[in-house]
Amino acid sequence: MNKNKNYSIVLAGGFGTRLWPVSRKAFPKQFTSLLGEETLLQNTNRRLVDMFNENIVYVVGKEHFYNTKNQLDEQGLNRNSVIIAEPVPRNTAPAILLGTLYINSFCDDAVIHVYPSDHLIADTDTLGRNIEDGSRYALEGYLVTYGIKPAYPETGYGYIKEGSRIDNFACKIESFHEKPDIKTASGFVDSGDYYWNSGIFAFRCSDLIEEYRKHCPEIWEVLSGYSGDPDVLTSERFGKLPSISFDEAIMECTDRGVVIRSDFQWSDLGSWKSVYELTDRDENGNYLKGRIITNNTRSCYVRSENRLVVLNDTEKMVVVDTDDALFISPLESSSRIKDIIEAQKDVYEFSNPVYVNKPWGFFVPVLKSDGYGIKRINVRPGARLSLQKHQNRSENWTVVKGRAFVIKGNEQFALEEGETVHIPANTIHRLQNREHSELEVIEIQFGSCIDEEDITRVEDDYGRALKK
Image 1 (cartoon, rainbow, N blue to C red):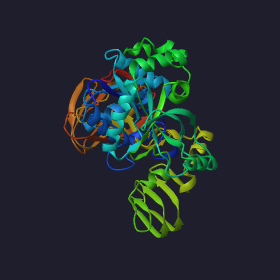
Image 2: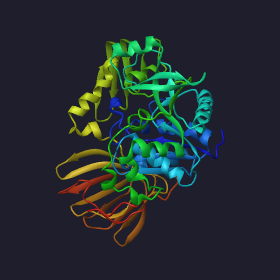
Image 3: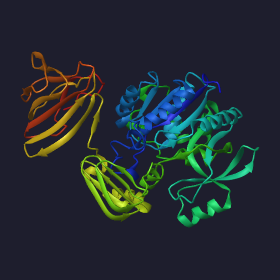
Image 4: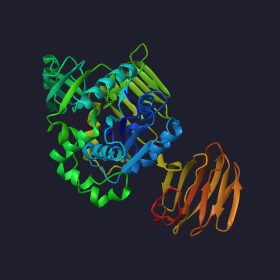
């Protein structure tokens, strides 16, 4: 495979609601460490850097731009990867065209490989061989998808039915089928004619662009001028696009689609059950992470971030305890949490994580009450918050770890561990970490409004609009 002409588009959108409460709309599963130390995004990036050098383009939601950038920077494998931020979510069809048009602007004969950022692929050697096959078919003008022979009737995956055979490696695609019920899925598996849909694709730039012109003119006409210019990606313009998947918009319409049988170990980690099946378990079939005590407990997935969790006479359950939420369900039906979340959209904990990520680090809300609030602020080495002020609140900062550099009005000074500074309302201020280790500060807010909207930015390193 010629790495100079092969590019990868990584799709880092999606909300991963079936893995709540670890995965949430504001911090979905690709940014979490579900298996191992690295996040799913970092795991995907590590895998692709080996195959594509730095020819990788990430397409993400605007709200996840800094989540993606921070995690890639933390990993330190590729400094030149491009991140394209969609202003509003519109599913995978617009996202894939965005990445393709960007690559086409400087390499119109490139072969592009598309990957979700939140899937697990364990066998990278086999994946590499399958990618070589995909590149070969893409260069022949096909739009390639990779099918996984189903090991069991999974209702959480999409399926592809194979059509006429092209050769020993590839078949035409007869049809796509979204997540079936258990009876239908069993029939698919028994027939031997179906694959799990991996959501991984390969194609040549020019071929895909032609298919968008033909089958998806409403998307093509809006995005055709895109070559990396953010002015094309206005919320108003992008918001007019249909929200449609790549499968539905292109693969179900094209006559160039082929599926190649792929042998790599794959999972889309679409439920706690699928995560459980990939874990190392003890002699009772339990996966236990955190402070867990069990008695007569078998075949359970139990995860606790802080508190002690005790299970007695329990079997085939999932228990996930975070700082602000607890989820308990039979493993088999754990994916139904998505239905609950969709029916209860106003519940704060369904969308918002405990850790609120920012381009400079993150903060953790500790307590919020009438007239005051407490949060923990963690600032990455070398990063700083915006130069700002608050109209309706004052703040006390206490350094608990590291060394802070503070701007307060006309004053500039360092703040050591254990030291505190008071920031009155309407005072220009900034918190900065000039050290090589993380800075941790406890902030206590006092005032009539302690909402995050009460901020006026005077100067900002991250290009955020000045906001009151």
